[in-house]
Length: 228
Image 1 (cartoon, rainbow, N blue to C red):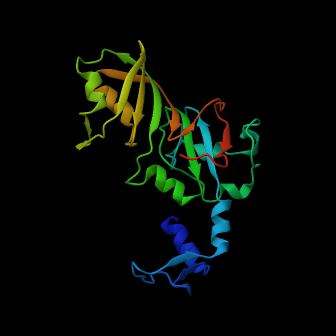
Image 2 (image 1 turned 180 degrees about the vertical axis):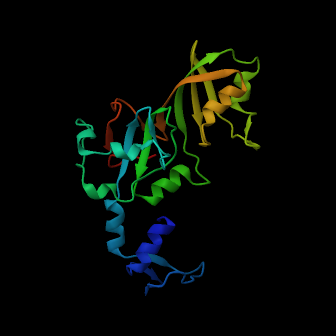
Image 3 (image 1 turned 135 degrees about the horizontal axis):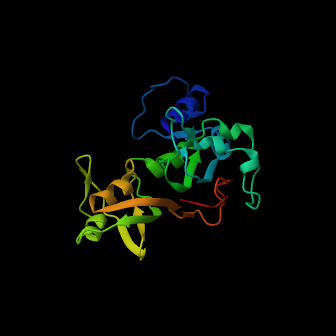
């Protein structure tokens, strides 16, 4: 229905009802059998939350910047909105609370989702998320004899086994990865474990949303009816 932070804001504004009774105190308990509803104002507020698709260039970090790094949200400017993408126009309020739903490291490019909507963030990066992310990965080196099988299933990072992945060769130096998780620098580290070095990485799909022909450094709003 919403994120925890959004729920707190809705309660403080008097937009939450338990069995028809307005609740305004944070931490109020409700039974499993209670009916919890949102005021129409909360529903309107949710509809006004935006989700943005950015074609992130190399050199920008997706999340909180380290010293000397520029966060990708700095590219969300009216002059960078993709001119041919139909839909709403940029408003300064759309930057309020806008945050990346997933990571894409500084050396990688491609589709980055930024959202104000906690429901979208949970869908993409929640612990129980099953949304696929597709990458095109250019590599150098010699793949170990069992390397492709290990990339698909059998590797561990930081002492934790990785989920099965869909990995295939597209040509002599390019692999296609489809993952259902997003560990830090995951693909680069996976490739290193089987004798390969990543020299180019581009995310082209998140769930059912494609990067398509969105130009590098440009962004667009998630379209009405478009779902991850």
